[in-house]
Image (tube, rainbow, N blue to C red):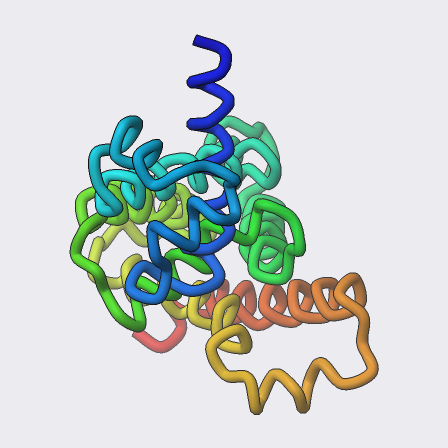
Length: 207
């Protein structure tokens, strides 16, 4: 049993890295097996197919992200909504620039948004729903607005700032130049927070 679990874990770890780096279509079962040091029959034995393995990887990436850089715990923190907003933005930015396993989930999301495999749509929807609820609660607490459509627009306005540089390499080069990751994360987090908070606090003035 231990040997079987060990092989399964090796496959998952290898698949996490390759799927996150290359996406579903550009990752082969043979490549995963080579990296994991197992034969192709092992993938069929434990997961039955590449698609099933990919679904397992998405669930695992979510677990890792929440363990290392949790977002959902913000729901239970007894702190001001403004502080929750800062922590939410900081965590999303940190995940995006992380060099450890926390990077897997945002990279998988990015691949799926650019070229959807259609294999994990239900899992993606569930994860998005949970994160959306967390962000909506924060925005609602700051603005007092309870209208879903407006919360949706405000939430995506915040998220798009957090993710923009990662999907725009040319612009990223302009801003990242001569900055290490720690400096960049702090600079981006502070800017996105101040810009977003100012917008949220003044939103009702324009209604």
